[in-house]
Length: 278
Image (cartoon, rainbow, N blue to C red):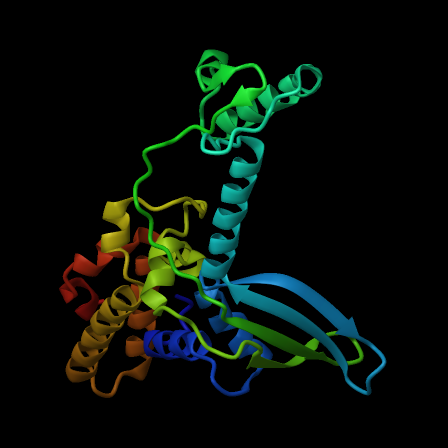
């Protein structure tokens, strides 16, 4: 949390940028400050620019990440079925000449599939081929994953001045319907990079799949509200103890924010008394 950012503003802007019903206009500062808080919701999938207009513009197209995950899952499923057919009800006659020419390609495809799923042992790949030229698809025990097909898409039009510096951002929804899920589902599937960076400034931010325990504990809005509550408690206590000392108030609040950024979320449990006598 940059010290100029209010947590209540972050929560409000996240909700506004998630549920875009009407055209939304932002200043460059607002966009740079608040749009990263929904980088786990949207993924850019295209851009265009127009330098022939009186005002230079650049358009970026975003889609919901959950829609992208659904497309990838569907593409993986189609690819697996195409490479490894298994239709015992309608067997297809096998031409020995075709088998000789294609068995190596099929075997390579199965090996590649095994490798992509963390199986590098050639023997484990061979056991899934019953006979030359007659491979069978491998069945896996998969844990159920949260699924949702979301068609939400938006476009961001950035206006530029003559020196190509942004002057305004306009965000509009390009899909007919909004999200088919709430923002908490996006937070469970992909961690928000901005919040992680805020809570762990000394650690590199990695995008990796969350465990079930992490998903249950990870609630961005609740975390931001907890930070804001502690911030308000300290500010109220300082105003009560030093009602006419604005300099002390500002200095102490900056110190508290810096300490939060340095130590992370565990600092929220620390007592506030040490900051009342600085």
